[in-house]
Image (tube, rainbow, N blue to C red):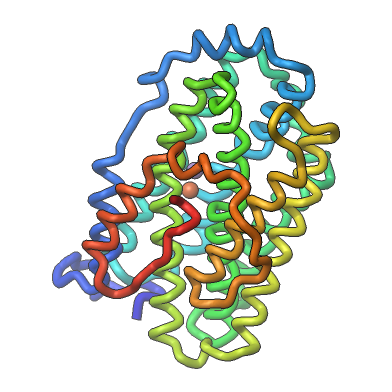
Length: 326
Ligand code: MN
Ligand code: FE
């Protein structure tokens, strides 16, 4: 069983039981990068030529992205790591936590370099209702998972653990982040902020593994705890994902009050629905929205395809569908 409080007998790496977690650790180490490898000076020039609405979109995006790295780390440190027994999963989570710290420092570097309104960045995520609602969604599930009256090894505890995973990993990392990456990378499509685009490429590469880890973890827990596999629980998970899509819709309306060149709230919302359907399928569920991908260029904007192939050749446990990252 991967889920449970680790005991002294759970401290030997060998024999490895969850090969996918071990493989993901090695892949994550191979993906290591540092923010200062990218120079942002051309982006600084771009910033001066951008419209107010374009600057608003980037500022809004950064306001959400900036704290989320540390929110994910809190979910991992308090909610996930203490409740998993497998040392190979702990190895992976240690690397993921460093990556989230590195993303935090990457955004710090961007905020130090571009003349973005830092006051807005640091305050909107606390007082813009559509953005605050997203943050609260994730932190509420973590709070319920870490409640001292909850025993993680009971049915209620296991369900709560999975719901926390779905909220921070599937909804936040797997849907909201992809929506934000698409918006950021759309500037590079229009020959702007291309170095920020390179940083986002590296972040996408990390996040695609965070998502693989989360999906494999959820599928493993469901396989090992068949009492969780009920139509009621599956419906609860689906509702969580639908709720995530609704929260993102309100947020996108505040990001694009008017729309910018090539991008508006409807376009981003359709991409969000497309990505949400891929996540549902990866969890073995039917799609909800059945829309086409409006941002097909995202296929070439990221290099996750290669990583996905690596992972599939290593992983014999599950066939995880990766269409959303292609
Ligand atoms: Mn991250
Ligand atoms: Fe992440």
